[in-house]
Image 1: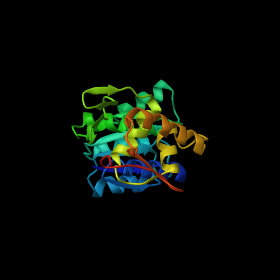
Image 2: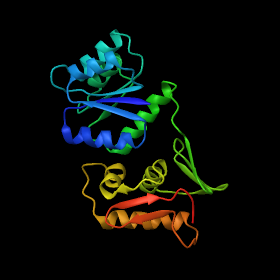
Image 3: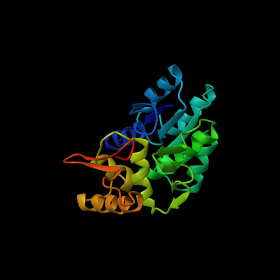
Image 4: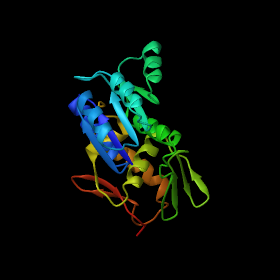
Length: 225
């Protein structure tokens, strides 16, 4: 899948790009509405994420112009405007959904999956590692036929690791995905969460499926050892 992100806040844009690159195939990013329109015109995107307030051309005007020019992919608006009349204006302009700032990355990813499903762009729903099967859409985990009950943050952690199995994820990446980029999280918070998840999925095995990469972060093993 190909996704375009138009957001003039550099820090937020980089965080969104980083998270989505781990979930989908390709991401382009711009910081103003004029560039967004040009990118939409010359390329084919499955989804466009638009900040409402951007330099040169606003997100709402980019949305209107893109629809007028025949763009039929998904459009997701990022906005600090939570008034119902503003939200209706965005949807009437052609947006498929919206996310109100500030938001957690988990909400953004969920909205992206929902828009892509509505646009008939399938997202990989089931991720299997050995005897564990993660259902991304239903937000459930099974070991063989038995469900393992997870809290919200436990699922977000495991989902992120499973999607990127075999890849080392830094602590900062995991902080952003699980708690959101604007939360103050310590190493102890993450380590405690990993410990809880390990207890539920490892079943007394000599080595955990979640591997600690000293000084960097964590990764999930492709298979149990």
